[in-house]
Image (cartoon, rainbow, N blue to C red; front, side):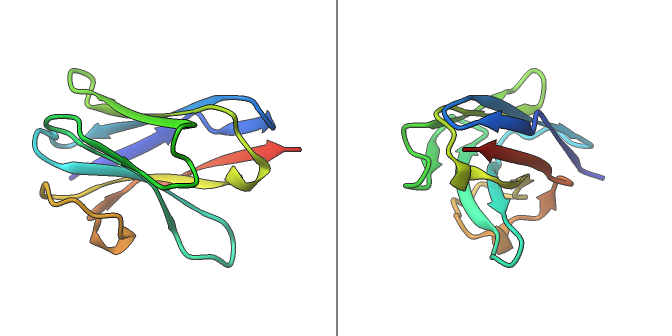
Length: 124
């Protein structure tokens, strides 16, 4: 059974940085798409970034492009989201997710495995 566990969330002031981690267990991801999404109460889950486990191609939402960097460590079976220049509007629960296949998608409904989420709060 696949498990994804996020860590690294917390409270930070605007302009600060955080790094989220997503540790995967239960299988080795070698040819999958993995992503980060976020959600605030009352709103739909929103795409943040995705990475192809094989090759490392990436994609970002316009709202985070240039501020966030997604990466993965194959040896550790771990994905990361480095967040710089954080803004209050980045406040949300952040989820990591994985697809069973390598198809590129920004739609959260296309992802098969999810972590429990980690809260990121950016104060102004």
